[in-house]
Image (tube, rainbow over the protein chains, first blue to last red):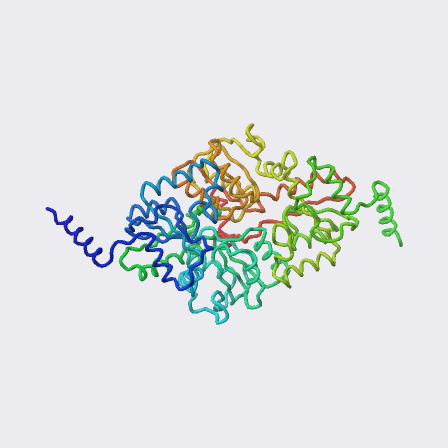
Length: 299
Length: 299
């Protein structure tokens, strides 16, 4: 009985007839042509691991090519991983910044080599796209499309709520385990700014000090920068608040958006979004899992 | 009836007889002479606000000269604030890094001026002191004195426990509202490394990869650095874990230690430790206050 094998062969032939199997380099060329903004040479959007001339069997988009994501990509036959964030634990993926002989790094590189994976970072240009691909994905996931302000793409005007309720709504929609909030929980608000990721304290402060922003929602910040700035603003009795979603929950949906877009860019190749997930344990936040059930009922 | 006034006068005279009232500059000179390590010219340990020639009525030590801490210091007659972290929202307290005309910064500077406060940062040399003043304060607050390893001052060997239990113990001792943990909650461990503050990913990774470290306890890290490194280590089935206390809870007790030390350095001046406190709301972690009572009973 050779039916399954011949069926596979037919599918493979059909695929190759439609489009010769592309290499990772060719896929990235297609992305460069399609992203809608000029490709910059000064960018972190480069190959981080693997051979760019590898024939692509499938693409996984993700927040970061974590060891776990690489395992899941390999298991599902996706050998090109398109990740938003670094693979090797620093912004420029400089291996020399990791302690020499580090076993975690060595283990990750070995897995990539053995499974012939290719990792490409897609950060700067996915943000630069108009509209910003990460922001679009996040607005959709948060359900904030109807709240878009006419002033700027990352400003929103929503029905009046309190800081506590807005924080709970974000936490529950994005299933965040370790969100952090600064401000008066009872503060009434309608105007929010959304700045996913770790954009830096200067742009974060510039949004917070705007007259048309009550609360700023971010991914990450150094605690001695925007965190202490907001704490002082609150102590000075200004109507301001900060919601820190965590880096992953604040951007991840933007790479799900990227998978949707890529399917239109390379229609012949299987594309799947693989969530990296929030890295932290729930128990760590002081609210064990069994408590959650009680909390959810009480809301 | 002039009794209260004359009483005040008598007290003031008695004080000045014991020691002429020192200026902030003279207090800092005394600290430089007493800290036990050479004073470096390349340091963030400088005056950040106020007139160094102000006569010191009292000293407040604190994690950071937040607006709230400044208010409490002024209310209790302490006009010299000795803070471990920046006052103006970036490492070098560079005002030009804050958006021009920022109202939060202006409000803080106005308060400092109106109350004739002086702010000095005491970071590098308090860490460099032998033993490290922050580490000593933290070891005492955590109750880890009996666990000190002979290998290095920031390594500890404790009775066998699990990651989950160690995290809960740290959280409860330091009353942390938003702690974050990476690892297997059931992991058995005895060997911990403690690196308060935001020491950077390189030293954090160097501790984590040591054969004699199961869990690293830190204050803060960029999420794409030590966080993703630890997540990969765990995915690679290495016996490693990371506990992120938050920057304030990871160092604050070290400035309480500083107050104890300062009382011996400038015995004629009132010295008080003013906690800055964790900046985040409890509700934000997904575990409202009313739930805590249930949890605490259940433990």
